[in-house]
Image 1 (cartoon, one colour):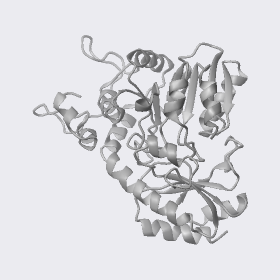
Image 2: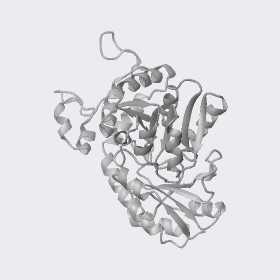
Image 3: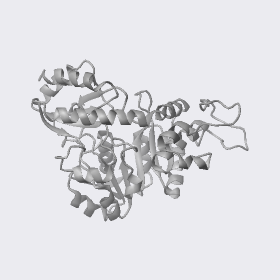
Image 4: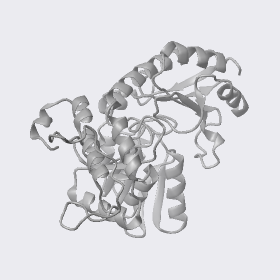
Length: 369
């Protein structure tokens, strides 16, 4: 931060103030810098290596987890940068269910003999801890997208021989701090909750290891996985209201999860904050809040789930998550979704609309089953 006194301020305050200049005459918001080159002798040289909008946005991102932050063009770009840290043939361990894009990419890399991949059944904490002890990289998606199971990050990171990376997109930094639990890198698809308005693509890697940050910055520059000035600007703008959005959406999600558990057309609610959940104790120990994402298994098949999601008037039947608008979708409609995801699973991303409006629309849509 530009001013050491900021460390005394609460996170919500720092997110509003990060990246701003208080110099007389300076713009209140950092300007969008549309230049590929900069005059010799200053902080910046060529915009593929660094540029002012990244500096401002990364300062806010770093506040989230008390770490250095690197901005990428997407969450997948951030993931691929991590993989580039590994020598060919490195052993990677991950859950057998996780975000479909990363799951697919891991399997492609294994098929090409770029990595040696071991997939552990989600929920088998003992097997993951054992596998971590001989892995070059442990990739944890927790809570798991879309089944919402929770990995014991602290125990797994403590056992890991190599790097531990946590995809923190679902929980978000206001609800979970993987670096405090022993992870080496926390990754986000900033397209989602951090941006919060479904209008940008970005990815983020956070670490307290300066050597890792330097290596990853070099990979970003040489791979060209860089964010545009526009997306960096939009991301910073979205983060100004992050705490307000997360608090509202998390409160609403908890209420909707409670009501869905009593709905006659729902067989199971998958949400870390439900006390009957098998992972509730772990979730409570490592999460300060349970987030705005949940999933349900409906009493019916894939066709019934499709009827429900097609019948909503307020909930958008669309992919992605973390925006101010509420979305839901049957995840197995995607060809590359892990086969362990049930056909009748619907993932819900709760936005900031009125809870009663959201519930009324869910109820009428589910009653179409």
